[in-house]
Image (cartoon, rainbow, N blue to C red; front, side, top):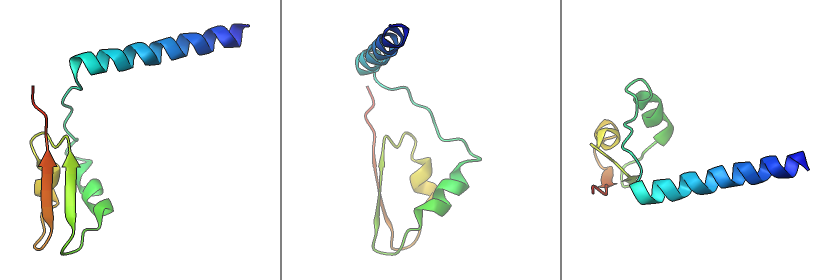
Length: 79
């Protein structure tokens, strides 16, 4: 019975935080400068490819990933 109560509690917390995020919209949290080179290394972009950045904020990932022949498209919703 205790496990069921814990699961219901965790489900309620997840539901409430999801509802709050939908109501408030997600906060802007920029990528840390120390993490940016690792993200760019993992991208492995080739000429002719397109990088889509959803929630691009100030576009720092797109700017850091810029290469000749690679197209970058950023989408940002600002309320």
